Image (cartoon, rainbow over all chains, first blue to last red):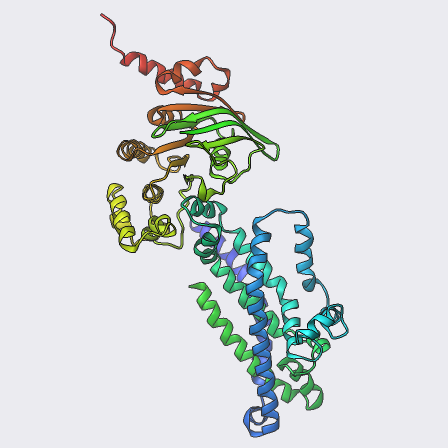
Amino acid sequence: MPKKIVGVEKFLLTLSIAGSLLVFFLLSPVIALFISIDPDTLSQTLYRDPVLANEFRRALLVTLEASVLSTSILLVLGIPLAYILARKRFWGREFIESLIDVPLMIPHAVAGVMVLVAYGRRGLLGPITSWLGLAVDDSFWGIVATMAFVSAPIMIDTLKMGFRNIDPMLEYIGRSLGASPYKVFQTITLPLALRSILSGAILSWARALSEVGAILIVAYYPKSINVLVIEWFSTYGIRYAVSISLVLALLSLAVFTLLRLVVEK
Amino acid sequence: MIVVEDLLVKLGGFKLEIPRLAIERGEYMVVMGPSGVGKTVFLETLLGIHRPLRGRIIVDGRDVTYEPPEKRGFTIIPQDYGLFPHMSVYDNIAYGLRVRGYGREEIDRRVRWIAGILEIKHLLDRKPRSLSGGEKQRVALARALVIDPEILLLDEPLSNLDPRLRLSARELLKQLHRRLGFTAIHVTHDLSEAIDLGNRIAYIHNGRLYGVYARNEFLETIYSKPYIEYVRPLIEILLREKRSSVPPSP
């Protein structure tokens, strides 16, 4: 018996060493970012230089607004789509599922080009988006559309898995007790999928927040924070890019930790 | 009265045929057969999960074959009891009453009434994950019975209980049926359970209803049938017991 325990401990120790290597690899850039901070440049970008501070604040706001909006749109439209894909078998379902995953497989710049040729002023649906005031070229809606396009697969796939994990019999029981399909969806399906809905929202929001390649092509203006990092890096050097990056990293870490705590509960 | 006529259901390569099955109001019908012969598919078809290729399901003269589950009058208790894990026991039991628009006081009165009958009043604030198998079964029964269902479908409701609890659960089902007078269609592969509970027993084998037998004649009638192989030793024991319990004629 004691030999067995030692064997298990050795096994776990081996796994822990391998896992620690990955944690070290992921943690190093975060630590390096903190160490690389120049307090003088940081204070300059945050408040001392009004031009830089203003540009930084505006870009941060644009990014937060666009990412929250794209995640909200994906939630509203993604929940029905994911439910249908999870529950129903129909002709062409596999094609639709592959189509949703396209943004995961293509380079980010290509995603940007695709959004532009579809929803840009001269794009396929340009007349409609322009008429609605939603044309994507260099506009806030361009950032929202690009973020939604690249983060949709993560949202849909997470929601789909969540819905698939709910026993359909629970829904039939609800209906056999007299509830309509809408009532069952509202009182049984959605509450049971809540954890997946929150996970999907967190992950797709993170994906939206981290997008830069596609946004550079679709909407350089209004400047989002990721575009600003690139611009400051090439114009003023790495010290300035590090300042923005630190704020962004801290913000992401705080929000993610908070949301994960909520989801774990 | 529930009448199932000329029913044919196809699921992939599996086929279920019910030429005719009529169940009287207040009857406790047991549908018996080995595992994998289509008993659960039959219940799921009655509930409205599977669309039959042909045939009719008639409840009190009303054709419900293509009605949605909420308009059929069938309520199911599945093998794992299917309690809503995010709701308390109280909310599970109250669910059917709430969606039917009952007032708060009436809901409370009915929930406490059925909880009293099933002796689960002390569990009302608990979540299903903290309940034992026997407790879950009682809650599932309460949730189904509180709405006074037209027909209660029970899918192997005793199979997840240990043997001791299974016997007391049988007694509970018999007692509830006597007291509340509901109509039940109870699916099982357990011969002694079928004989103990069923007013009549419908025998399904290889996706086909072979016959419907009164409880008293079931053992003798099916003993000679070739499709009963899987329970023949048990039938022999039960028949011996039955014969030895009959007093010799003077």
